[in-house]
Image (tube, rainbow, N blue to C red; front, side):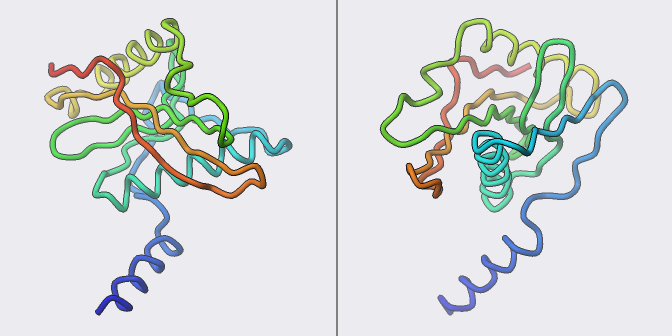
Length: 158
């Protein structure tokens, strides 16, 4: 039975790496990260890992890489009647964790971007919201070491 569960999990990761149901709406711009540097590659890999992790944990991915006038939302997901706005950050082990490096201005722009996103989608108006930072740690040789979700200090219910 353990072998079957492991096989199903592996197949899910390869066949459906994240929830494909999300769609863009008018006024939302989806961006592509540059493909040239190791840093950009690591950022793309971190975002894919978080999307996969959330999807396998029962979240429904609503949108990814949405930009509005207040900034970019990396991942917007829904679970149990709550919207989760996830800012993805990657770092190399033994360096400072990125959740502690978010400036007050970045926190404010995430909060405003999340509110604008929810306001533009009336079907999401009744859901509570949480803003989180997803930290993806990489080893010095480029392998992914760990994933951790950290809620920011404001969780609101509207």
